[in-house]
Structures are given as C-alpha cells and as structure tokens.
Length: 333
Image (cartoon, rainbow, N blue to C red):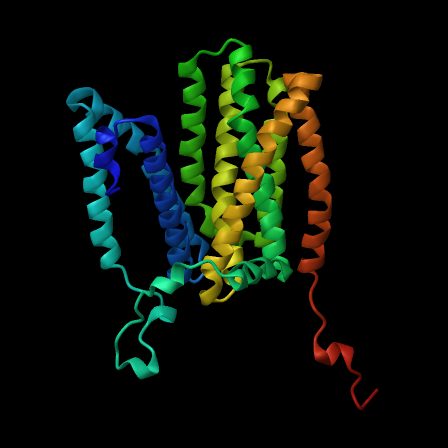
C-alpha cells in the first residue's frame, strides 16, 4: 500500500512494470502472512477462518468500486493516496494484533519477543523440501488435490466462461452482474463453513462441494443461454466454493503444527498458481479443437474422473481405526 502513491509518478513502461512486480510480490507476501496468522490464532477453527474469508471477499469486492468512485470525482492522486491511507490503517491494526504463541518470548530471552532477522528471508532448499514433504500427510494431500479442482473451476470461469457468455450475446454489464453475484454468494457461504464442519466429515464436505461445483460449471452450455438460470448456477457455485475454502484451510491447519502453517500456505498457493497457469491454455486448446460449448463437457468429465481416486481416499480416511483392544486378543480368549 505504501507504494500506491508512486504509480502516478512513474514515467515509463519498464519502471511501471518493475513497480508492479514489487507491489504484486508484497501483496502476495501480505496475503500469505494473513492466512498463516489466522490459521495460527484460530487454531484451525472453520468458523473464524470463514469470517476471515468473508471479510477478505468483502474487501476485494468493494475496494475497486470505492477506488473507482474516488478516481472519477478526485482524480488519480486521491485514489492512490486512499490506498496508502488504508495501508497505514492496516499496519496499525497488525501492530496491535497478538502474536501466535510460537513467536512468543523464548525461555532465554528474558521476556523479549523473537526478532526479525535478515537471513530469515533468504531462500533455503530445506524450506522447500519441508513444504513438499507435507504432502505425505493424508489430510494435506487430499485437501491439496481438492483445492486444485476447486481452482480449476475458477480458472474456467475467468477464461472460456467469459468467451462463452459473450458468444451467446450477453453484454458486459450482465456478465459483470453474474460475477458479482457469485462473489456475494461466496462471501455468504464462507460464514456457513463453521456449521458445515460440525454437520459431517469435513473431507467429505469439501469433496462433495467440489464435485457439485464441477457439475455446475460443466453444465453451463445446457442452460440455454438463459440469464436467470446462469444467475442461479453462479450463485449456487459461488456459495459452495465459499463454504469449501474455509473448510479446506481448516483441515490443513489442523493437520500440521503451528510452526508449519506458513509452509502449508505456501504449498497451497503454489498449487493454485500451477492450476491458474495450466488450465486456461488447456481449456483454450480444447475449445479451439472441439468448440467452446464442448470444452465445458470435456474438461468437466476429466475433472470428475480425477475425483474418483479422491473419493476412495476420503472413504479410506473415514474408516474407524481399530483400537488396540480390538486387535489384540484378551487372556480370556
């Protein structure tokens, strides 16, 4: 946010590109830190994580509207200064936020909290190896696969889905309304995540919600171009994805220790970036070869097939583990 006032001062493209790269990296670090902190402080509670997701979506939905209004009535400088001012407010709030217990004072530090060291930001191969080793945990492996499927539907929505809507004659305002409705429904769904965790097995919840999301996005060409049906489908899928995301974060947070929350966040974001890079070109290639409408069915069927082994993993994980008394015979036997 502190870099926001620099954008109107940038003279050329390459300087702007460099500033954008630095700004994007800092935003990514901040988002990773926010997810890590909420996982540590909430101890994996889906209700708290759901509220965190709700306000995150609320901000990402309202901030562009507010910034655009300031730009229209005040120009570029007030719009960018608004971002810098909001960054200052966030910094004050973060300073007053309690640290997770693992960053509390150590026994030999005489009550002083752990300090930041420059070497902490250096790249170390052990950090990457440790992060990828988390996939050996069944709950983490399953949730990573599910979030890849979930992100695939989002990648479809931001690529070929828009092309399809434009092809059937929907104007930009109607397309934007569909996306806005999905975001609103997703934010409301996040508030239901805590109850969803209590209603049943969380791994089955996130897998079944993902399967339904795949079916809804794959069935888009079957809706006949009706705006009302597209709106209903978008709202249902947005609500499902809003419920799924906090459940996934909760499952992962509970599967690892507090000191590994940052590693699992990085691993999750790596999987999300990978699907965001791979899926749009794949979907575009299928659309060029067989047609836009057919690409929904082809990729949807492929994702459903990939969900079958995840279903087997979920059933195996849900089986009760026999106790020692059940395995070992008693002296009376």
